[in-house]
Image 1 (tube, rainbow, N blue to C red):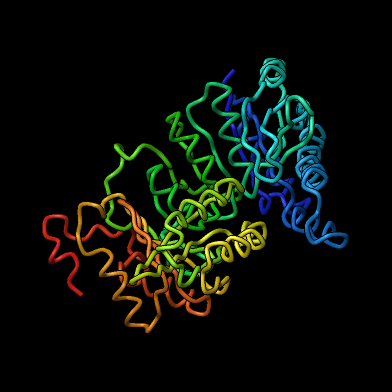
Image 2 (image 1 turned 90 degrees about the horizontal axis):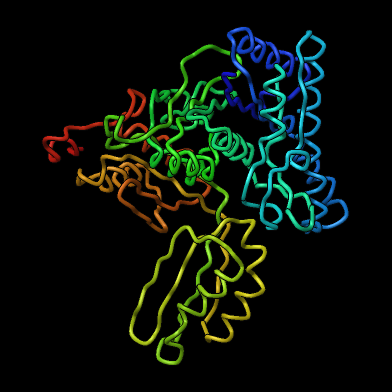
Length: 421
């Protein structure tokens, strides 16, 4: 039994004709002697439509009921694909997360996988079945409630399945040829990357790249599972996501962006009266289990200003609590801003090469783009800009680092030459 895990996203399954094409690709694997375990997302736009319908009744639908409803999208995809494979003369069977089961915690809408029972999968592979699994969903062990893993969660299902089956690679099929130096829909001259490290892919995914879910990459990294991102409808080689030790380091590998963030700004906090304001603010955010993407603090005299960024969907949960806390710590005012975007450059080699931030900032300055906040790490530099400047910013940075030629390597022997404008 030569098992392999193949994951197909929603755009690959958006209609009957595409499901047929995916079925043909799976059959090719079967003819090569493979035993495919196929993880599927919902058909394209299905999840969005289900959410839209739920909001006809409530702007904030009950999370349990919403997850139960959203889980049906993947069940449709899985069943249709299994029906097609059976019609072509192959033994096939679909399972949802409840049937296996895939056990998660009870955090509706963004549940974490705790365990995957693969007994039924192994049994049917031994009987020469093609097994189709619903991605994106799980079940709580004690309550038997259905949960979903959050946007892109089918990637995580595929990696969890790969790990549970004891495999060392996973194939992720999408509607593009692999991972690019930028979003090819925004920057047509963006170049496909042959390889990228787990660390860089994590930053790309966290920065807004939609090709992989961050949790899936983290799971692959922790267990040294190679991810192969491919086009569902072409036979191009795709992109390998793997250990950085096997890859030549790039100063800048790519640029990514997200418009799904909001900024919260506390202005003029009287520090002498509320010295514990930082712990109070961030304790409240931690208790709501909200991730913070950036923090900026300015202290002047007896007052402090504090800004931080969160996802827009999380801000909805925080607004009331933040307003109350702002009054308690006597901030002059608190401002909520959803009209900005984050642009990020990533590269595992930048920590050893001074001047990367300067080169990025100069590209934006040349286009007269205002930078509101900055965040850095060993392998990334992020800036927050106005939404209206997003396209210009991504394009300017991509051009500045000449990423249309591939990853920017500069001159590692001379940083002065590498970063001369």
